[in-house]
Figure 1: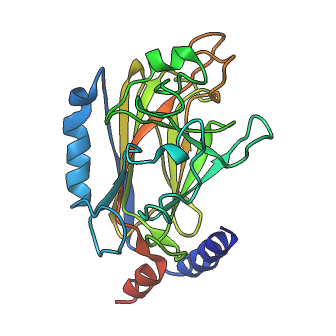
Figure 2: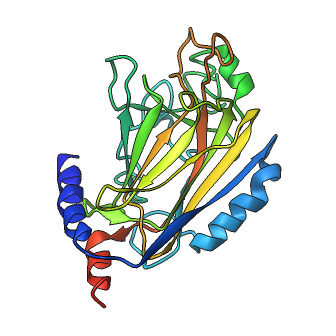
Length: 273
């Protein structure tokens, strides 16, 4: 992990010296009570990124997707998902890092909800943590969801799938469930940064209580995302924190959809062509 972060810093600094012809990112959003209600917007975002490249290897274009449903029980609740699961075990070019810890235990652990045939528990959609969550959270692709242990914010770092080579992407989208907060302190939002650590775009996720919300950020020209920060609601998942009680807004995540992670080396070389 330290190697990944060091490489990102070194080559991010290298790219900062290169003037890229870039334009602002565009934002696509949709809300709905169920998956069909947002399917059209999600599919349009997918089409803009290109063909789904699946797992492993490296490609010059296209997209990657994570729907959490293939995560084995050994890496789902009551167990925890390793931060680099989707760059090692199932290489799709992303590594996660938790931010803004609310408690000091279990740092940098990620939680994938159990499915209904889990051998040790059957409480789906994080109902094992708080029974109310299973009622308020819904899925775009059944039946697993993602959250962060003891935190409600995370970074997504991009790498050439299966390697420690820092990479960038031209688009990043996430489907959320049960987004309620609208104020600056409570909103669910995504902020994406370039290789030089400058913020390219920040956007709030549209709200829909007990529904699904999609947001997709897509760059134009040569601008690229090297890191995307996700803030989900204003509270961690906890037995004593129920959505809507005392100002609590707990939000879970479903599908991640993003452009093929392209090596920073390649982007650097292309800038001189």
